[in-house]
Amino acid sequence: MVIRRALLAALLVLCAAFTACQRNPPLFDSPPNAIAAIGNHKLSLGEVRAAIIRGATNRKWTIQSQSPGIVTVEAVSRYKHEYGLTVDVHYTETSFTITYRDSYNLDYNAKNGTIHPTYGYWVRNLEAAIKLALLDAPRFSSGRQGASTP
Image 1 (cartoon, rainbow, N blue to C red):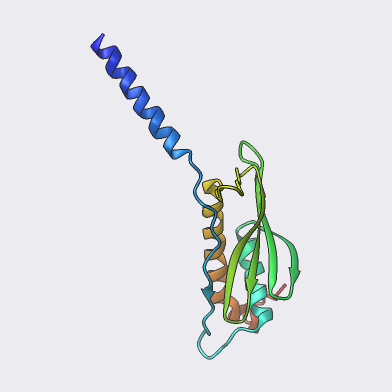
Image 2 (cartoon, helix red, strand yellow; image 1 turned 90 degrees about the horizontal axis):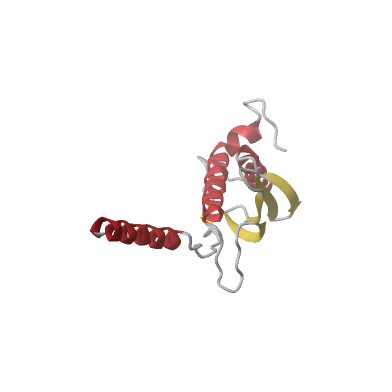
């Protein structure tokens, strides 16, 4: 009987812990990310846009649209269930930010301002990929590696 109660108590604790982990975190937009000149080379708007596209496509995001100062990208996962995320990458010659645009099957709750934890993971990875592509931007724009800007 004591063992049964101990197992029941342990099960309740595990259920409570699992339920607590299922809460979705708040939706956030990335803070402005500064784009520094690399050496003596200050990036142009075209080079920044090309780096954003290169960083996004390297992480398997697809480009949905482009307009001056904004690139809209989408990520889709088909692991177990299909879900997707669309964000806008706003950019200037000196900074870029990533803002939420739309999603499906990511439990977005506009009233509570929450979304599935996958959102944060994807946005942070996209941000890191863009930063890495920006570091390589002068190399790609000069054509030294045989690459061309999209």
